[in-house]
Image (cartoon, rainbow, N blue to C red):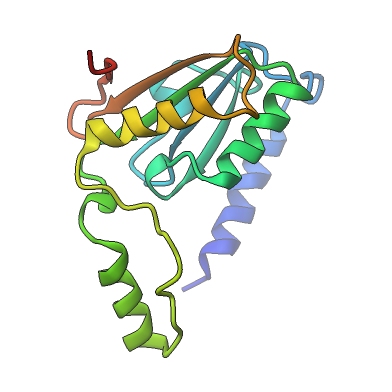
Length: 168
């Protein structure tokens, strides 16, 4: 059986055969950046109706607004003109299933490496994690005041995106 990378290269050859998007501008056409999870069940371009060139998509475990996500958003906004950020977490997320201590212990047992100083950014409450990340962006000195920031949850069973309201 061929490695997955060989399959990826074959798929890319098919993609290249009718690729006609080389003219697209570097800034995203819809001036939006999306922060979401790396979960393979999420295809944010599809469930948000984006085409190639429409949006920046920042993905990481849990769709968390980490320092690196903020780094990407600063570049997206300051250099490439995005004016809106949407934070999207999802149901049935693996980040709901562990604590920092549990994962650090697993890493220690399996590799002998001490990961106890790492915040893996797990969360026990899905909607609150969205609120926390939206709040982190809104309070960041690096994110301009005029940037519209919204939070939502994607349901992996139905495909529906639902806005998470700020708590009153």
